[in-house]
Length: 299
Ligand code: ADP
Image (cartoon, rainbow, N blue to C red; front, side, top):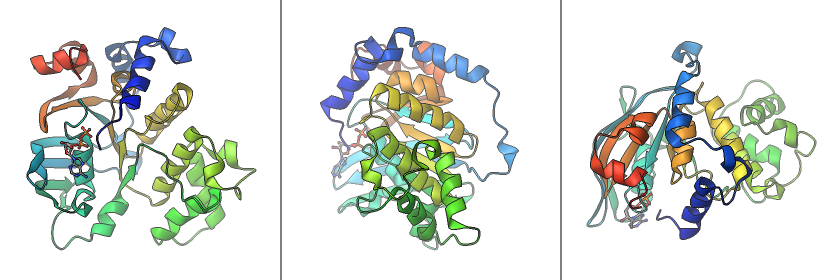
């Protein structure tokens, strides 16, 4: 989706120190990325099922509009990959191709390959519902099921996935803990999900996504509707989730990419310009266009 100006303003306010509390001490994207790299890396062998996603010459179209052009890219398990680039460069389209949501739009089509480990998710024999279960998605605006309680929003995810066995309450508790929300909602599970704050609603949506037991989580600007404190909370959660999942995050906010992403991919006009370690992208990119973008010359 094309970004609204408010999104950019939110991001700018974060980076310039005009808006958020933490801005005064906010490190540069490169410094944040370097600090993150120094952290202990999670073992991919924890027993969780994070999987590698590989794009091979992916193209996506809306009628005659070639929105994603020949992109090859790998998203390793237990890593966070950020996708950055100016509005309209194809970031959302690219992630929507990964779990086959792109094809739901009338007139839209894609070609090339998307692999989940070895599985070609576009293979005719592959069930699209199973693809979307394995590859969950969190959207810009928190969208809890409006008529459902906090409990049922999460339970619905489990039911949707046909997960039985064990106690449903335990399962919901475990999932809400996993989304960093349990302590805030444990005494009000029967209240409507939409009564929560924006940041809590987004964590509820993340819980609903986790309840399906995915292997990959796609996040499309998950913090753009949130204030700086709620944003930071989601970023901490992403750092936790990385231990268990493959994470792809579209973000307009370069500081956010610096804080959360192992690697960053820069897109321009549908093409992948460059993909590298996040601190490299922000300090010493290979391509002049990346340099111009990360230094704020356009975008
Ligand atoms: P980004 O996420 O980087 O802002 P998008 O993937 O939303 O970029 O858009 C890439 C291109 O595809 C743009 O030219 C945009 O106008 C077009 N596009 C996006 N969504 C649709 C849609 N639903 N129908 C037609 N064109 C679309």
